[in-house]
Length: 229
Image (tube, rainbow, N blue to C red; front, side, top):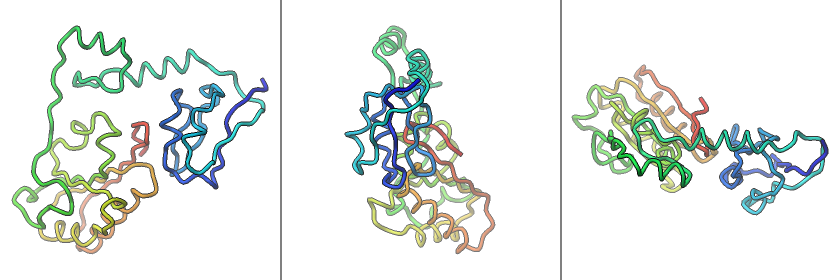
């Protein structure tokens, strides 16, 4: 059918993710640092995403597209809004919150194993680093991914930072930590936005500079809280 639907200019898109957050139907996703209309049948053509875009990269067009599927959108929302495994409410509707309030839920246990956690404040050598599995996390990842403590911080030593806000290169500090301690593995969690590339690159350079062969992995999280790789 011919209907009004959004069109995203990827050349103008700066990867901020504001449009994906503004899209209540979940039609827009961040892929490779760019906003993409991944579900045409989720786009209702109302354009809540247009005013959210700071780059004027979204406009309307009329073209052949699948009909808006309200039932599919509601089903996707219900799945996303389900309570977390630990019983803590996540991004929930009022109805789900009322149900959760009716029965006491088990508290979510935190898994922060040391202090401080900021990369800038962490010592280059400490007893908790010996034999540690190290997690280097971009600040926003813990807020974007609801089960972050359980899946990423558990049994790891956590260091956090934001290269865009801190305006520093973490390479030297991370190199010293890896070189001076018996680190068993390194996991990096980053958001799928360009500025998070700074923390990923700093870890890669630190591993190379340390001269050690340590297992490592990069986990990317979308602005709507999904693990991408």
